[in-house]
Length: 189
Image (cartoon, rainbow, N blue to C red; front, top):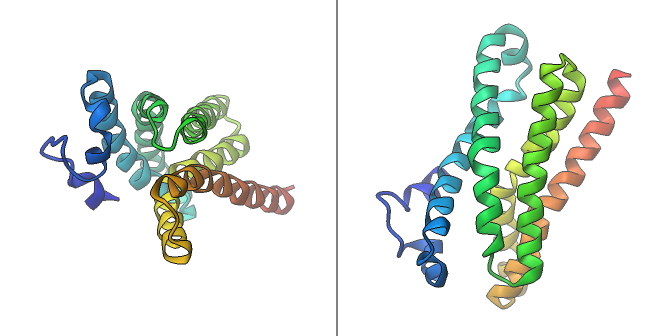
């Protein structure tokens, strides 16, 4: 994901994914939202991967807290709101736009609930909402995996793939997250 993000820097509006978004590049808010999204989504991925380490959570609590703040600020302040803006312009029409907008809203909501829970010192609820939040963060990766698999297996039209992966990239992640939470609750109750 870091390499994918690097291709957009220095700022270039005629590279990779942006080549098929030329009709929206004329909108300043789209350009700003896109660059905010790709930048802070990478921070969210890196920060999120460290947060589920029991060793970091228990032995390096201040590190866990600092990285957690980086994650939450990245998601709540930048990546999710900008994701909502670019989701509105998603390829594939209404259903893709709906999928990406719901993803952004869910990502923001779960992250906010995790923040509110930790502020209330409800660490179990915090963990549950962070699992959900990070499942949505991982959609950046799973969307690309599903896209590759669908193209290799079925060779569908590009916009058909986009409409499918817009949903598969995060809905299945959320189902897996709920299964992990159920197992977690079962073991901790």
